[in-house]
Length: 294
Ligand SMILES: NC(=O)c1ccc[n+]([C@@H]2O[C@H](COP(=O)([O-])OP(=O)(O)OC[C@H]3O[C@@H](n4cnc5c(N)ncnc54)[C@H](O)[C@@H]3O)[C@@H](O)[C@H]2O)c1
Image (cartoon, rainbow, N blue to C red; front, side):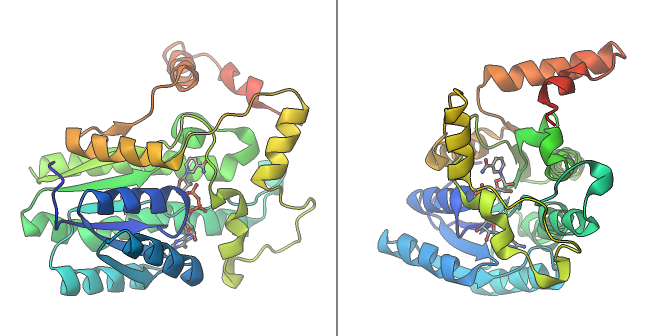
């Protein structure tokens, strides 16, 4: 679709990281932006930053895992702006799960699913019917991850399961939109190809009490800086992709109506091939063994 001045973009998880970069880029393209996040202070700071750049910004504190809050968000946005052209279901969290799957805290699963899976579904249900009925061109971008979206990192497997669900949900959404001959497109985003300097490693900052861990963590949370230092100390190269590059991929992808917002990467391509090959050959997923850590 064509992006043009005055259109409206709704971005969840917009107070930080990739969501903020997408909102900023949409504003730079002349779109009015609705910044949605559960973290109020960070959300207001993000809005102030965009307003300094002359953007038309509306904010709303929403927990995307709560259906009623997402439905109320859509009512608010439609009352205020009358239309939505771009919807980015981007809010997401790392689950904080430790150890083997049979040792996981069920609340790690419940929380990660509430935000990463139900959050996307609530966004689709609250906005897509009105985007279709509006009759104007529109686009939905759902944020997945190479972890799960391509193949799981067994050390982050709850997250991976949620991100695999986002891919399948978006493929299904794409098919449903085509079946309706809707003027609304759909894409699934794989941020990268390298690491990103975002708040994802500190996801627990927004973990609500109702999903609190039932037993305390055995090991402290590791920050991105700590992980980076450990990787470098072990002699590994660590590369980062700027969030602005991810936002650029999204804008280009919406313009080109591209479903797979998958940056060029030999590493991703090798993983995709290995997984597809294993399925086609009915061979066991030996490609996962290289990821298995103690
Ligand atoms: N950072 C990475 O390496 C990476 C890689 C692949 C995919 N992703 C995905 O990108 C998306 C954005 O993450 P990020 O890396 O920018 O992290 P981030 O923590 O910087 O941003 C995520 C935002 O989502 C918000 N959020 C969390 N729970 C929420 C809820 N219940 N309701 C509304 N907002 C909520 C947070 O407050 C935060 O502002 C996520 O879906 C994440 O899974 C990130």
